[in-house]
Image (cartoon, rainbow, N blue to C red; front, side, top):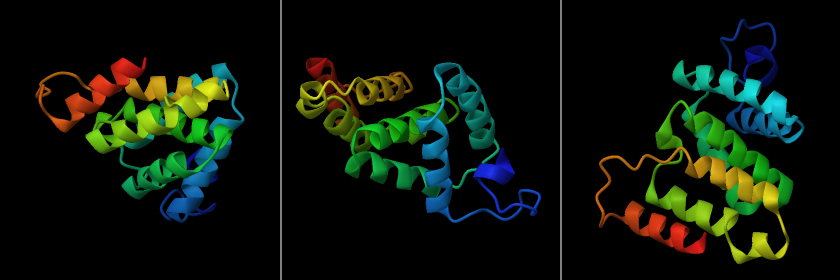
Amino acid sequence: FVEIFLCFPGTDGKENLPHDQIAHNLLILVGHASISELASIEEALCKLVKSESIPANVFTILWSIAGKSKSDTRAASLMVLSMAASADRLIVDSASRLRLLLEVGLSDYVEDRNDWKVVRSAACALQRVSLASMDPISAKAVVLEHIIERL
């Protein structure tokens, strides 16, 4: 898995591909996976995130893609982020990222176009948000209120 999606072949996982290439590889992997394959991919991604094998910048690139892309690419990007957040909640757990989830995953645009893949991916990402010890007047709490109103 590592030598196919994250690292240059033949380097025993020691030389990472460029970060944008890693993000692209993960999008293709998740975008073409069946529901049953997604569970295995999530398990692999969790192990890679916990071992810090995926550079943090890859997740920044995926957030950017989620904000700028259309339908299937947006859904795949949000799904990869959600899977990775199973191992590290900080990947989705901030006010700015929650705001982006609201704007791109739960907006009138996706509802008008019946883009349920994007909605499902956004909902999966929302499940990773930590509500424990959240200040009720924080920016994160305000955004979560907007999300709840939207739902």
